[in-house]
Each structure stands twice: as C-alpha cells, then as structure tokens.
Amino acid sequence: MRIGVLAVQGAFVEHEAMFHQLGAEVFEIRQKRDLDRPFDGLVLPGGESTVMKKLLRELDLLEPLRRKIEDGMPVLATCAGLILLAEQLTDGEPPCFATLPVTVRRNAYGRQLGSFSQEADVQGIGSFPMVFIRAPYVETIQNGVEVLATVQEKIVAVCYQNQIGLAFHPELSGRPDLHRFFLKRVEQYQKQA
Ligand code: GLN
Image 1 (cartoon, rainbow, N blue to C red):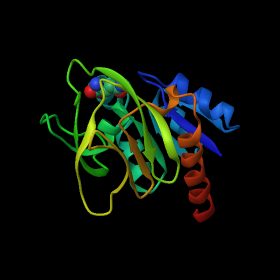
Image 2 (cartoon, rainbow, N blue to C red):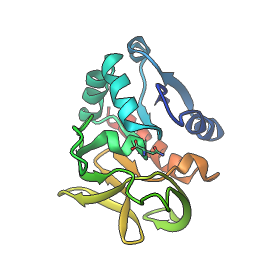
Image 3 (spheres, rainbow, N blue to C red):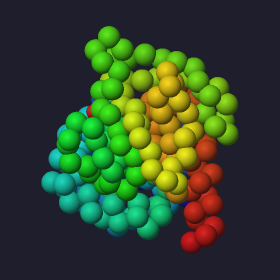
Image 4 (cartoon, rainbow, N blue to C red):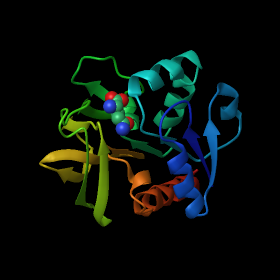
C-alpha cells in the first residue's frame, strides 16, 4: 500500500510522519512525473488552498489527480485540502477538484478564532482532539455525503464515497486514528481493484 501526499505547499510532512508511524509507505507528489509510480491513496494537506490550486494547475497535476479521485481513489483531505475537493465555495472562488458535493466556507471562524483546539466526537472513532487553523467548515451537503463530525453546530468532517474531508488537522493531534481509518479505506479499495 502506497500513499501519495501532495507536497507542493503546506503541512505535508506531518501527514508523512503519521503514516510512517502506522507502517504505511508514503511518497511526495511534487511534479507530474511523480504520478508515474503506482499508488493507492492520496492526501491533500492543509496549507493555503489558493496557492495549492495555482500550483496544481501550473504543474499540470490538477487533471490527472482529479481523474484518480473520480475513479474512486481514496482521498484524505484536511483543511485547505477540503477546500480543494469542494464542489462549491461560499466566497465565489472557482472550485479546484470539485469532486465532493458540499459547499465550504473558507476562514470560517473569523479572526478571533483563527486557531483553536477542541475535542469532539468523530463517527466510528470517538472523541478526537481537533486542531483548527484558519479553518473552513462545511456549510451545506448534498445527497450521499455522510457527516462524521460537528463542532459548534458546524460540520467539520464528511465522507463521500472514498473522499474524507476534514476541516481540522488530524496530523497535528498526535493521534493516528483518522489516518488509520483512511488506510482501512485504502485497503478496501485495493481489494476491489
Ligand atoms: N485558510 C486556508 C485556506 O483558505 C486553510 C488553512 C489550513 O489549511 N490550515 O486555504
């Protein structure tokens, strides 16, 4: 099982550390030729979604990765990664992959709550320490999207087919549960293939 971590910008190293801890093989996706090697799951990290979107386009990574997601490759998308997956953004910015049928509000907690942590339940996992950094939340979901967690009555974790979208940073929590949950999905996907 090999996990490709998008590594053009943002907090990708922390994800890699989590996967190493779980014994999974990871590699960094920095340019198009990195996609020549086979892999079974994709991570879209936190960072700055507008910068990542621009780089994805410039590096010619957007379409090949979108195709993989549409073909069912499991994706773990955190914070800016969730913004990249969303079909719609409330700020009117054009979407990036647009494979996850949700509307996302960027920088949704305002200045005072720029960064905060909160423990909340994640479906199937239990209580989880969530780290939010200039985080988005999911404002609306369409049919077929499962809500995995809410905080302050806002949706902060969703699952749709093989796409897991999180508004927070599980790679900074010191707990590998959500990465393990993702790896299980990757394993199932491999069995189907
Ligand atoms: N505010 C960032 C954005 O809009 C996301 C922040 C993060 O990934 N921690 O892209």
